[in-house]
Image (tube, rainbow, N blue to C red):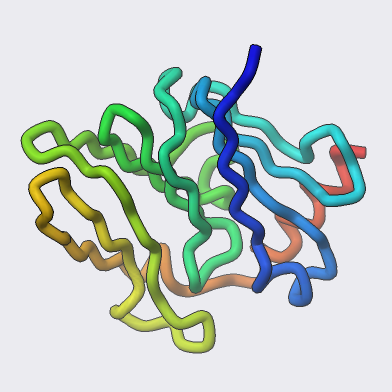
Length: 154
């Protein structure tokens, strides 16, 4: 079976964590975290989008264990691997005006209220949603979480 695959490298985390990690979002809705030096994924989530294709996949700019997924049903999923590495901690479907694209924004050097996600709607409207403090302030446990996921996988 062939999958539409979108690669989103975690460039800003490679040097910080000394890991070459990247994420893959697939047409079957699965999400995978890979280390460049291994073919097998470090982690894989098959049910995070209920089978809907991944349209966009981006890491939060201020927390290394938070990432956002937009699926083909116009549902935004926010994952926080420290809170749950099994499923998204937030899922919100937007039916009235479908979301067709997203961009996560923020300054990794400053954890402030100007971190969040921009959503582009089918109508042409751009909507800005700001993350709560829980999604913007990193902890020391995040680096350990990513390192242990990569180490435990192999």
